[in-house]
Image (cartoon, rainbow, N blue to C red; front, side, top):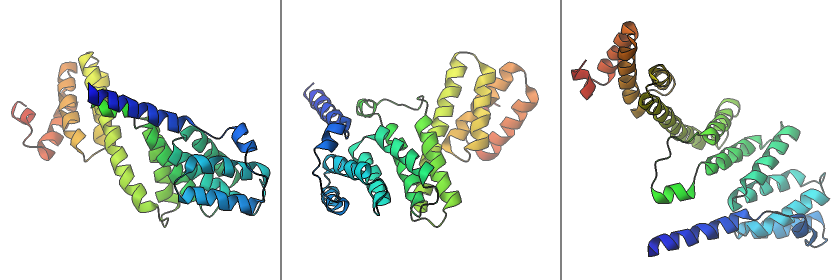
Amino acid sequence: MIKFTVKIATVLLFLTLTACSSSPEKIDKVPDKSAQALYLDAKGALDNGLYQKAIPILSAIDSRYPFGAISHQVQLDLIYAYYKSGDVAQGTALVDRFLRLNPGHKNIDYVYYMRALMNLSLEENLFQEMAGIDRSDRDPKHSRSAFDDFRTILTQYPESKYASDARKRMMSIKSRLADYELAAARFFMKRKAFAAAANRGRYIVEYFGPGKQVEEALVIMIECYEILGLDDLKRNARQVLVLNYPNNPAVKGL
């Protein structure tokens, strides 16, 4: 009980810190300085990890000097500050604006990368993780969005310094998406919606192989096709299972 209380206190503190964002009142309190002077203040805050302090200063520069020489760098730093402070809503809104207004910017790969990281952060449910609950059945829409941005980096900016990390993260996301599809297939099996379950299994085999989820997906497909009387489809799925997973217990019963 003591450990649980400590965890809840930690969660509340985390939510309090990340709920803060730059408000008009905070921006108004930023001293009336030149863009360069304010930027030095903001950089000092960023370098020291004081993201909540940097946000209103950067926002003030963005508001007061929207067409200044450092306006793009200010927005890039502000995106980073929002991400580090946990303000994903503000961060993604700024990313969307930046992409719309500056599609040819030299650091556009970084902008896609940051939006992908912010979408991934939305998949991290602190309460669920602390309770040790499997969340594979939760619709991974943010993971899909992150996957698309990482793919954009690899396809459009293959020489980007973020390409290698993007590729690694895509592999992890791919496994997460396969887990979701597998959870959906299991759900349909329990509801005796065998056609839907088989379709989910087939989707896993076609788009997420090779992977640990494919083996179970094939078993589900075989069972569903048998119940549905689809002998040809069952035979094909069985051949794939035997060829790729000959030690699967289900093979002996086929």
